[in-house]
Length: 229
Image (tube, rainbow, N blue to C red):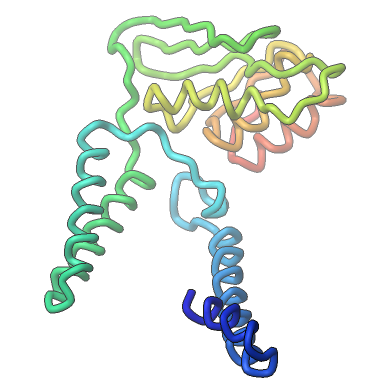
């Protein structure tokens, strides 16, 4: 930013002259950081993911039409910004760009599924299991979500990086049912990310009472609005 550049340049001449520019730069940076933190903590209200912060909003892979529309809207906004005399066109192009972004974020996609077909897909999660079942009626059920064994120490989240990525690529943004076959780390470890990203309507578990590592996962699903069975 100009104030920061001025602060650096004046600093070579005199620290006293540089102080006003440093102060202005500090205010600008605080404003930017505050805006980012505010947006990150702001809650989405009135959507299917009620209570989710903007920073946690995730969307499925858009269709080719929406990708091309986004590129076109961005190109129009950049072109209009270069022509200073056409402010109306600039505002219109920005409105179009925000409209496309809102469409991608909040309008549900049609999942890429085969109508009338029972589908079973084994997602490659290494050790452990994660199986996507799709009924002929289009209901999506996920059985387990992989995970790393307890003796492995890694920040890699299979539920986020593998399972969620596959579901998004299929255009799935909401699961009908999550199933936890048994509470072992290589079946359960990726489930928190899946619940956070896809807010399943129902959660099925194979034991009567959630205990141990299963308890916080069930609690998270309940907070996300899942019916517990």
